[in-house]
Length: 219
Ligand SMILES: [Ca+2]
Ligand SMILES: [Ca+2]
Ligand SMILES: [Ca+2]
Image (cartoon, rainbow, N blue to C red; front, side, top):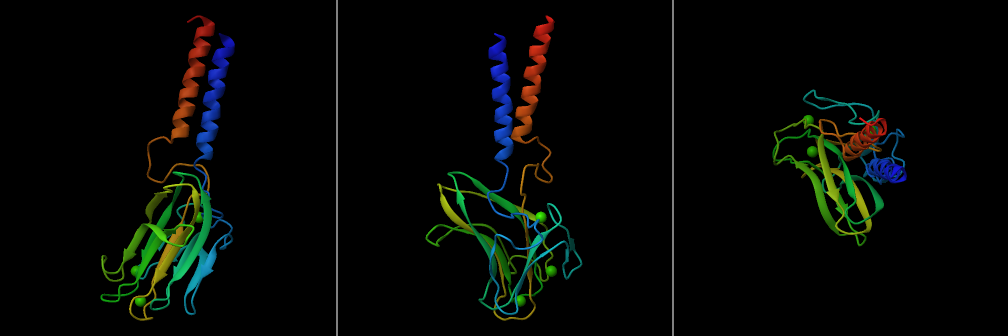
């Protein structure tokens, strides 16, 4: 009987370890904690920029800090029709999740509706999803938007390309900014008060150990 109990405990602990590993991002340098764009392919037209920064101030005065760690990516427009992007190809399993945080510092006014996005392309280069998008047509002039969480689950196993982008609308004046960050390893989401699945498993394991110890003492 004792061997069986230890087997159950070992299985529970193993599940906790696997559960924790499942939260690690499949992306390289997902949160830009190298302090640069290592792992990302840049498509930066003349006049635009893609940098990694530790803070940014919107033109309405909002101060942005990293969601995770010390760094986030900051993309600035040029254009029109000439998007500034960074992208990364990644091999995903069926149902595997990509997630992160994005914010838009619009610095233009109607009808010059600059826009920013998170897009996913499949192995043939076709767009399969746009998990996050903001354009000047839906927000106030000079909008300093909040960090917003996005996530996307791969519909099947394969190689996908994640793209972060920003673009000017109609003309090249009044450049806007898009901000991107992501979680690189294990840990709870900001604002999420409920325990992660791995935490639940650990709590169950603790309970199982406690029950076993009580039985050993004959309580
Ligand atoms: Ca970061
Ligand atoms: Ca703004
Ligand atoms: Ca503009």
